[in-house]
Amino acid sequence: MMALELSFLGGFAFLLVILAIVLAAARLLMGPTIPDRVVAADVLGVITTAGLIWLASMLDNAIYLDIALVYGALAFVGVVAIARALESNRGNKG
Image 1: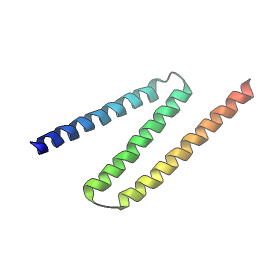
Image 2: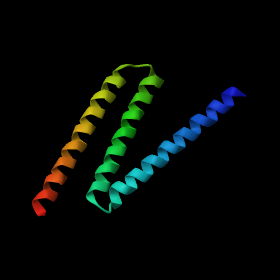
Image 3: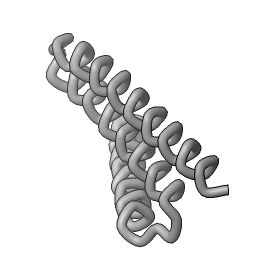
Image 4: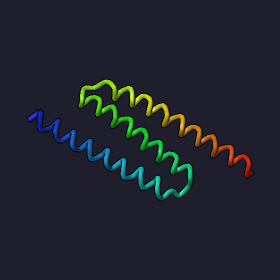
């Protein structure tokens, strides 16, 4: 009985992650503004990092944790750089 509940919850969590990916990809493609697209790209980066951590757990291989750490740090730095560039462009216009 307990295994069935855990299996159901795992499948439900997987569906929620897929829904989050679809919604973030839609926001990335449709906008309407550039900051919306940057946030969507950040969300996809966080989901990818979580997926790498899940993969490390499933394969019992710690190298994927190192990859997730580097990927997460690079994604964060990239989003901050884009946000700063957008902020400086906004300051130059006004």
